[in-house]
Length: 280
Image 1 (cartoon, helix red, strand yellow):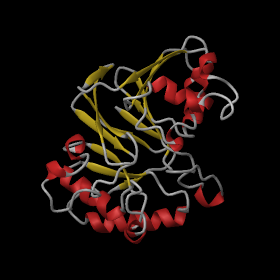
Image 2 (cartoon, helix red, strand yellow):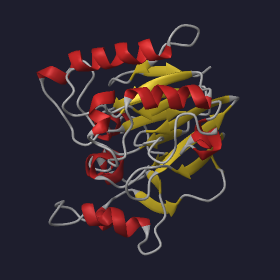
Image 3 (cartoon, helix red, strand yellow):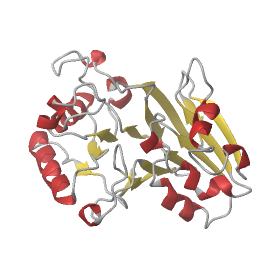
């Protein structure tokens, strides 16, 4: 399993000279399974560049897993080249709604006046599915989705293949309704992340910023590290960087995470565009 980061920002794309090191595109992660299957996690602005790379190969199947429908996680879908190319088969999975089907919710964005072309004009074969309640298979991987603490219906994903596990929870406040010393079962997302080899997790705020953003649905760096420790993950990757955070700010954020992790555990990584991790 190979994990590639195409966008790691949260809330709003943040291009410019101050963010060139880690990138300014919003959430998009590619997962390449050992059998060649492609899974994409979220369709933030980073999916545009990924789509150009995919379009250079013969058309095939791609599965897109949406954590939720906030704009920073779907804004790149209209610029995803395979969507507009005949021969591609795009399966879009997302959180269920009691009132509106997933296709209709995505089409609100991919239609005038918000977007010049209607979703119905896509040349690819596109299907939309609510995520199942039980784990399901994509290629050789077992995929599981569970709701996590964030405003609006929001999912985290767990992908297991050949004895390796990736967990992706980009928007999450695990301790909004739980204390750090609570039993793990009471902590949002714990069951999904437990024992994962690699965890990409929301780390948008500093500890001071979190105090003025309670209820916004994002984690402080201290909460992110505490969650990863409680879940017993092999390695943590800091994700969903605040759009105001410069490259220098992110270096300081990373230093704080390393300090909190301490000795005896794998040092955390920080997501940047172009980061590639092989789980082998």
